Structures are given as C-alpha cells and as structure tokens.
Length: 426
Image 1 (cartoon, helix red, strand yellow):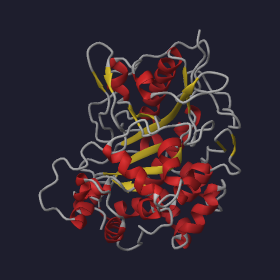
Image 2 (image 1 turned 180 degrees about the horizontal axis):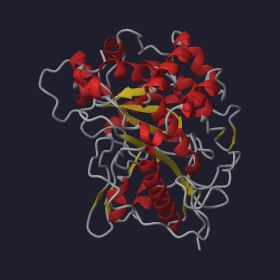
Image 3 (image 1 turned 135 degrees about the vertical axis):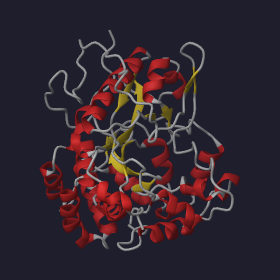
Image 4 (image 1 turned 180 degrees about the vertical axis):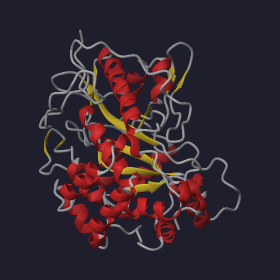
C-alpha cells in the first residue's frame, strides 16, 4: 500500500498531533480516502478558474494555471489601464466569501526524488476530482487546486482537507508525493524544465531573465497558499487593501516554510520570499512601490503603467497586462488575492486562512492591525528583507490581533449593510 503522498520535506518542522477528523489533520497511513464533498461545494466559481477539463472517462486536458482565463475576455473596447484598474478594485456585489488556491510540488516518491511531468500526474485525475478541485499546473509543474469559495473559513478548510487527501491518494497511486513547501527542496532550475512552454510563459521567462535568475526560479520552483477574500465597499475596502498589503511581511515571516532549496539548507526560512524580492520589482512590487495610503487605485495604476508589457499581442489589452503583474496582494475585481504565503502543510492551512480572514473581515481587527502596521508603511523594502529571514517585529502582535478577533469561521460574512451604499476602493 503506497504511503500518504504528503509529508514534511527534509528540515521542515513536523506537524503536531492532530485529531483524526479535524480540518487540516494529516492523513494517517490507515485512514481511508474521503470522497469529495457534494452538497457543501457550491457552483460559485468566482475565485477559481477551470484549467483541466475532463474528457471521456477520466481523461483530462492539461492547461496553465497562472491567471490566464478571462484576462481579456469581455473587456470593453477602448478601456484604458486606469479604468481597468478601477474595475479590479470594485467591491464584491454580495460580499461574504473566502477562497483559496493551493500549490503543491509533485516529486517522485523515491529515495532520490525526481521532478514529475504534469501529464503523468494529470492522467490519474478522475472527473469528480476535476470538478471539485479545478486542478491546473504552474510553469514548473506545480499542481494548483482551486476549490470554490465558501461563506465560512470552517466550511472552506473542511473542503480543502478532503481535496488534499484525495490529491495525495491520486499522487501516491502514480508513485508521486506532493511537497507542501514554498520552494522545491530537491531541485534547481537545471532539473525542472518549463513544463508549459506557452507563448505567455516563454515571454514571461525571457522578461524575468533580463533582470536575473530569481524570476526563473520563481516560475519553476516555488509554491504558495493564496487566499481570496471578498472586497468590501468604501472605507472598509480601503482598509482591507492596506491591511492585506502591509500584513505581508509579518505573515510571510510567521508562516515561512521554505528553508531548503536545491537539496540543501537555504540559510533562511523564507527562501521563497527572498526569490520574489529578487525577481523583477517592476512586476512584483516587493518593495511597496504599488502602495499609497490615500490613493490605492492611482498608485496601482502607476505601478501597472511602469511595468513593461510582455512582447505578445495579448499584452496590449490592459486586463491581460494586469495579469502579468504579481504583487504580494492583487485586486481581482470583487476580491483581493493574498499571494505572499508559502505553501503550507495541511495541518497549518486552517490557521493561515483564519488569520488572513479575521484581519480583513473583522472591523476591530482591521483597525488594530492598521495601528500596528502603518508606522512601517513607508519601509516595505526593509520589512520584506526581514520577512525572508523568518523574522518580523510585528508578527507576534499581528497574530494576537487575528486570534483575538471573533471566530474566523464566522468572520467571512461581516455586517456590511451600512457600507453597501458607498463605492469601491478609491
């Protein structure tokens, strides 16, 4: 019987004992694979994008996973960059959902792990898994799972726990294990090819290569836990954007999970954060250049205008160009996409999702977080440099604020009636 495909990478802190049926508990060797949820999965796919479509039987079609779907679809003719950015900061029509995208690094379950061709893993996907997880692949073959958003953190992490167990079982049946870490702990870019040599990824890789090797490492070797939270109208939405962005360094440090790289210690626990710092800052904003305390839309539009467009025809469209920018937090039209967390082991996902949701959706938590974080708002380069080492002077206090908020499982649907009369982030 194959062993569970999730396991801590060498050097990763092992999980604490977990109750057998709690969301995030590690699958045990004798634990049966749970079936994907049925009634609890809603049809709402706002935070997800279809990327692998079931064919006949269990066949699947491979597709890319980096924000390609809809990046220009339906864009009104003549819409300029500023107008498109304004649309990205528009609030949710019916706020109250939270979602995740989970990236995992597939390697062979052998004493000397080897990279895995995405087609080999995808051949094991059944139609039920494809429907529930909406799996896709990143350029280096990282598996991404995009379940539908849910109204509470509790429901979401329960769905995630089921999907991760199912993904682990599928992988194990094909001699593969899924590493839940921020950086591939075994391989370098020389070992991991560009598995999806699309026009988009080839152009993106060339653009990053002009700056240095970090962009290629990001594309081929890194994995994240991305959390999506509905954007509230008016002042609450502006607060959400600032808290989500300024909380990046403390939370990246608190959840740092990339201490190994290319088969040896990276020397820091946040190697993935350091890779993003060293990639093209014109696209990543890991120095805070896209932030402004009073004009978030204007600052983001200026950030987007200053970033060079990829030399492909699609990049002429403002919405597509925006999809080639990867700041720590990205406005997505109705919700915020928090991108800075390393991929997390299953047992720690509930805490990460709960912390982010509480900070963004609880009024008191947002205000307390701003009081803590605003003094360093103009010092984001230093804050991210510290975070890559696994340290942030604000981390402990920020986690305390989140944990003191009302239960995160209920914080995903805040009271927003009074705010609905006002507009989006301005």
